Image 1: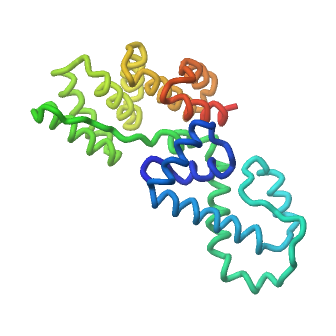
Image 2: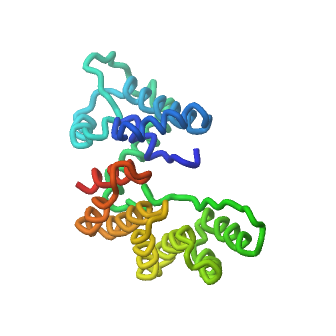
Length: 244
């Protein structure tokens, strides 16, 4: 389930994914048992709450407030049963789903980086020399989110290959995470100015940084630079939707 998180599962169930993003997610379901199990568990929790909870005016008010989430559907015809009968069975499920709903309601506008910023550094080893060792070590630390250890390794690598847009991109991302924001944005803007495969990923990450800082205008301006056929287009559209 490394490529997707619980937020993606909720977006899939809510119908918030773009068609191409939904297609990729469904393809992943066929090959990722952990992802399929997580989706099944989420559906079970939602179904349990929908079928078992008694009608409640406050809950209905919350449903109306969070209508856009469409996580829990309330049936118009429901058999009324004593709540004590189900309290033990659904208590954990209710807590889990309530936590997910509250996380989405309160953090969607503040934790854009947590929702969209989880990426892994991928490297291809061909020569087996010292430069490759540097990249492998950098990737290991990057994927463990030890960003401060990534930067000096990529600094060294870029001294031997200053044209590497890959190293520049990942150094930029690592720098923004480790507090060296100005340096990180400089790296990412250099990548965007080039013509590598990381060009629009860099634009997206710049937008993501500004979104996290609540600078929606600047974030949206960078998102507009990402064309519809770019690899980052689907998540750019999702972030743009969240910002509006």
